[in-house]
Structure formats: structure tokens, C-alpha cells
Image 1 (cartoon, one colour):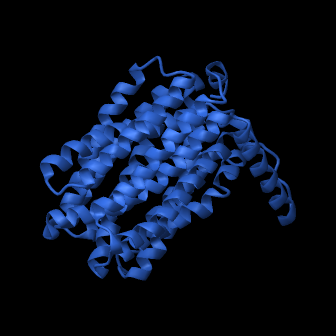
Image 2 (image 1 turned 180 degrees about the vertical axis):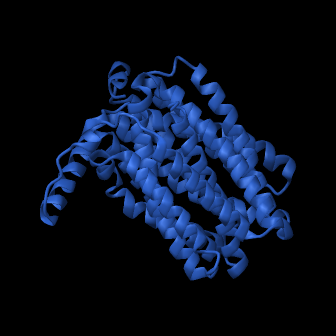
Image 3 (image 1 turned 90 degrees about the horizontal axis):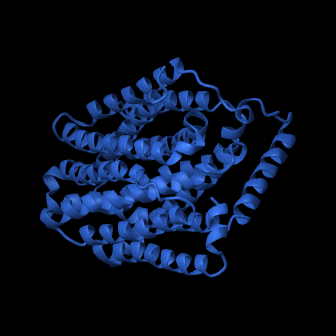
Length: 405
């Protein structure tokens, strides 16, 4: 089977994720009318990601990554369908928690396996294609979910959503590839005490590895700050959509993210052509695109006119896709035996950043406007990146940075 089908499997899985994000958030906001409940929906999803990211990287390095992805897809399909008979706020929170839990397992195993399948010399090109497919899934997922939820109801959206997970699992079931020895055949300690001690040693090894790589440490600090800032626009966009037209909130919610996704598609077509993105340039490109991404979110979330919102959502999508693609490429250049745990740390930082952001954002919204809240969050990311660039140029010489990839 063509190896690129593996990438389309992720696109199907992403399609489901983006559809349930729209449907569940709109469902919760319609049921409660509260931005605090909406934030709780996103925060509980993030909490699931935090818990699973503590050990998802360890499992990705110890077990068959393909099987982890199959089972998480099946489980997500089942729990999503549980919302149809029980669409109450408590059930929504439970489902969001388990989606966050299982999505982390899938994402870490998937990302860690990419260099194993396509080769470490093609990670930037492959990640650009992944981001492009993710962006296409985002466009169809968000716009499709917005239209379907608005005209046919959330139940149909959830059924289609579950079907995408099932298709992803079935394709993975038929796919075969040479899984890395370290991922499958690594000896597992027996007994609970030994297993916990083994996991502790694994985590100590990965944190020691990151601390020995100054630029890898700095890029993870930016990623953590980016996740924190991300809470503001994930909470802010559905509120912005309601401000535009409360009767068609799900439509405009999907439209804004859809236009953002079109920008992401364009970025992923450009990135593979930039052959000069090697060594330290890879890091600095990641840093600068993070700042431009934040500037874009600040601009369109501070406006209420579609003529400003949509063009800047498009530009923001370009820089956001560049930032996430370059970050994944940097992490995938680490050694295979530790790569799963490196991505596990990345997922943990992302989840912790989101969790903190979703805790702070509703509090700020009580006393500040949406635009001021976004300014504070994304302004903190821009400030962090400026400080990181300053510190990275001081202790680390250019030739050393190339070795830290």
C-alpha cells in the first residue's frame, strides 16, 4: 500500500476532530449560554491531553505505534456517538475529557512514526504535506460542521465525525510497515513498581536530553507559550462569531476557521520549496512565524467586520501552519529511540499551556473585552519569542545551533 495513505489516514482523523470541535462547542454554548462553560469544555479536553501526555510518549517508544492509533480511533468514534442520546453539559465534559485523552495518544504515536516511514531526510517535506492535509481537513471540517450543524443539527455532524474515525482505523488496520525495533521490541519491566520506575527513568532521560540541547529547550518554551496564547483565540473565535450574527453562530465560527485553514494550505505548499531552512535557520523561522501568527490573531479578533476578519484569518493561517510545521520538523530530527517521548513532552507542554490559558481567559473576559484578552495572551507570546531570540544568540554560537537540530 502506498505509504502516503498513512498521511491521508491522519487527515481523516483530523476531519473528525475539527467537526466535533465545532459541534460540541456550539452544543455546549447553546445549552448554557455561558463563556465559562465554553471554556470549561475546552479546558477539560485539554486536561485529558495533559494526563495522557505524561505517558503517551513512553508508550509510543515501547509499544506498536500503529496499534495505539487504531485503538484510539475506535474509542473516539464510540464516545462521540454517546453524545447523541445524552446531549447534556455533564456528558459533554466527559466526552471532551476522553477525546483529549485519546487524541494525545494518537498524535504522539503518529508524529513519532513519520521519520521511520518516510525517512529522516524528508521530514520537512512530509510535515508540509501533513500540515496541508490537516488544513484541508480543517477547512472541510469547520465549514462542513458549521453548515451541517446549522441546517441539519448536531446529531448528523457527530455521526459523520464518528465515521471519519472508523475509516481512519480501518485503513490503518490494512496498512503494514516496518515498525522500529525500539518501539515494538523494547523489553517491558514486569510488576507495577518496576514499570513505574522504568517510566520514571524514561522521563528523566528525555528531560536530560532536552536540557543538553539549548535550542530544543528554547523552542519548547515558545511552544508552551504558544499553547497558552492559543486558548485565547480558541475561546474567542466562537464568541466573535456570535458577535457577528448570533443566529448563525456555527456558520461564522466554521467560516472563520475555514478561511484560516485555506491560508494554512498555502503555507504548506510554500514551505517545502524553502531548501535553505536548515540548522539554526529552522529555529529562527519557527520563532518569527510564531510572532507573525500572534499579530494576526490580535488583529482579526480585535475587529467585528468580516472584511478585516477574513483576510487576516487567512494570513494568520499561513503563519500558524509555518510555526507548527517547523516545530514538528525540529522534534522529528531527534533520535528514533527517544522521539516518542520528545513528542510526549511537546504534547504535555501544549496541554499544560492550553489548560492554564483556559483557566485564565474566562477570568479576564469578566472584566475585559475580547480584544484586550487576546492582546494580553498573544502579547505574552510575542514577548516570550523576543526574549528567546535574545538568549539564543547570546550563549549559543551559530555553528553549535546546527548540531542541536
